[in-house]
Structure formats: structure tokens, C-alpha cells
Image 1 (cartoon, rainbow, N blue to C red):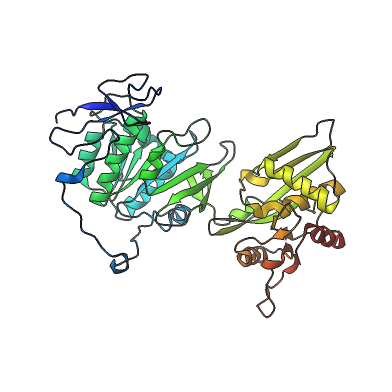
Image 2: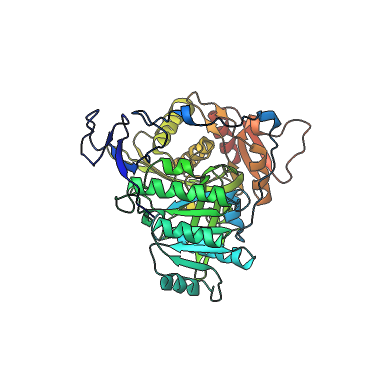
Length: 463
């Protein structure tokens, strides 16, 4: 196949250059020229901003939205329940999924287990490895107990050969590990560059939509934890998953950041074992410490991750500080912690100006929702007073700057999850308490509150 001509386009002004330059000749911006395949002779004309003139093109067929028949998307289970949950029910034919995470977190392990399960279920699967040899992939499969796996493996990084192989074999699912190692002969830049990642991902996405093959792209991450490469990579694909977790811990979280076929911010919880990653059916057990007796500074929060309510233990430690007291939070927003301490002082009379305050979400989970406010404030107060909260106590609710306790979404589901796990006392926003005449939640005594002062008064009465 003849190599197409390439040129360099400025990402700021759309100006072009026949060769790479440090400064754009049109707008004088630095480091903005990006390589791309040039338009072949006789192709549609472009203006300086890259817009095609459609004078020679035919028109498309228009459809009225209300007349388009909407049907449910067919899905194929991966055989791993927690992965299916994150994906929205399973693999979608023609869908493109991007999964990223720190090195060694378990991305390749999880995907190898998934394609093996799909192969055993009768789905033709292909594993394209660009970072390892076929022997290394086989060695990993032996460690995972997949000795007789029939998954086809291709050790290749050239895009044209990969697409030719996919076109010849038409697998139901193909894993590209990783997109940063794949390169196209049409571009002269190195694998992993912005131009190569964008062009290779675009070609693979077009192939997936045209052929119906589900493609999973493994992506590298930067030191900050974001997916490496151009931001447009995340816009191209249908689903973006992030692998989270501490490599020193055996537990891993897979979180959906984008999903055109399912819920966003859904999570799957896995445990790393000698035989690979295993789904955790009851993740709340991971995030709850096993205290024989209640201890000061510990409160159980019912948080919501996607559609799943989970119980997480919030621990606080308040200690005598120096001239510059420290505020440290792990798994929670540090700026929000400073705000909550100010609300405690102003509206509840609980002063921590000269105290070091440390807050931690047990198990390494990251909590971003404001419904954790009430639990954090009660944990801080408990540690400061040196008195534990009652056994079986849970709390949730957002606290505003005026001291009001605001409702959390899907409060009834949170309360039912807590009751199911044996918790008996709950302090929640008044709007989340069961309404009069509605069915009571068996075994759970609910104390509705409207302000933070009321919540602290109830806790003192429960001592």
C-alpha cells in the first residue's frame, strides 16, 4: 500500500506546514503543529481551518427523531459479574472501550480473564499485545490457571497488520494492549505520540463500528493519573474505565467515567488473588473495620457509587496541634474538610482551631459526593469528645455553610442497605426519612435532622 503524504496542522489556527516547525508560521504559537494525513489530490477542498467544502458532495438522508425506532442494545456477558456491572451489563457489539490505570494495577490480567471467559462461552476472541511477547502472555495465562485457553494472540504493533488480521478473522471481541504502542505507517511520528494515538484509535473505532467487533483499548496514564495522549481519545470511544487502587493493597476498583451504554460512575470491586482478579460480591465488608467495641472518631457512612449503595467507615483523629494546626484528609476533599470545620465552629460551637485534624476513608476508597459531610463532622466531634458513637450507627447528608443538613440522592436505598447489613441507628436529613404512612425500614431507628446542631444533640443523647 502506497504511503500517504502527511502534513502538519496547527491546533490553534488551523494553519498547515509541509514539515514540522517549533513555531506555527501563521499564528506564531509554539509547539502547536501536529502531524496528520494530508488530503489526497482530487479530494474535497478544505479551508485554512480544516472545514470541508461540501459543494461536490451529495446530501445525506434526514430522519425525524420521533420516527426512529429505538431498540435495546444487545450485550454479551464477559463472565465477570463486577466487570459487567461497570460496562452496563456486558460487551456491546461494535462498542469501543478504553481502560486505563497505573502500571501493574491489573488491567492486562482482568482483560485476559475476560477474553478467556468469552472464548469459553463460544465467542471468538483476539488478544493483540504490543508490550509483551506471545510467550509472556502465555506465561501469565498459566499463572491465572488458564492452561487450556483457546484465545488467539497476536504480537503486533503495526496498525495496518492489526486491522488486516481483524478483518480476516472477525472476532467478537479484540483487546489492544496498549494503544500507545500501536503505530501507523502513514505517519512518521513515533508510537505513543499524539498524532499516532489519535490516528490509530480513529481507525480502530471506525473498524469496530463497521464490522461489529467490540474493541477494548488499554491506555497508559500520566504521573497525575490521567489517560495519556490527546483528550480526543476519550471522546472517540464509547466507554472509559479507570482502574483504581493501591498496588500495596489486594483490592481494586474499576470505575466508569463515560459510558454511552450504561450508568456513569458505576464501580466494580475486585480482589487480587494468586489466580487473578476475583469480583467482590459485598464490597461494604472491605471498607468497614472490625472493631470489637465502638471507638471514638469512627462513623459509618452510606455512600452511593453509581447505582450501588456502599457502607464506608470514616475515621477522624483530633489531637493537640502546634501554632499551625494541620488538616489532612485521605480519600476525601481537603478543602471541604476545612469548610466543615468552620461550620462546626460557627453553628455548633465545636472549636478545632488549635487542633490537628486527620480524616480517613477506610480501605483506600475515594469519596467525592457531599453526602459524606454529616458523617465526617460527627466523626470529628466524637474524636474531640473522646466518646464513641453507638454500635450499629450510620449517617449521611450534605451540610451547607448555614449549618443546614441537605438531603442525599436515593436516601431510601441507602437506608435499606444499612438495615440489610445489621445497622440499627441512623441520623439522616429530614427529607430522606420515610414519609408518614410509608413502610418503615425494619430494624432501623431513624433520627431525621434539619441542622447540624440537632444531629450533635441527638448523638449526645445516644451516649
